Image (cartoon, rainbow, N blue to C red; front, side):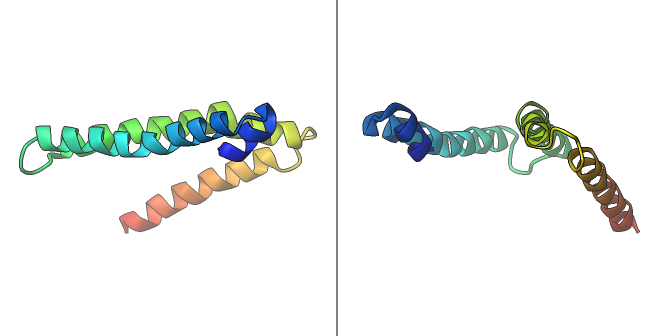
Length: 102
């Protein structure tokens, strides 16, 4: 995070502060998660697991839709690889889910 900010602005302080902000978000997220787990009692119920996994899955899907796919299409303007790779990835995940059920 720091290096692109430094090269874009020429300011070491801005690079450092953005890197600090980026790094501090993970412990803050961990603290929030820990507080949710502690608030649910001694043993986390299946509902709490489901809600937490759903929130994380939603975040990951939004990152893919808003950031990764547009960037991939930017570098593959003729769409020779992106659609096929995304479809193959989804098929692999679906197959692995089916195989783990057996």
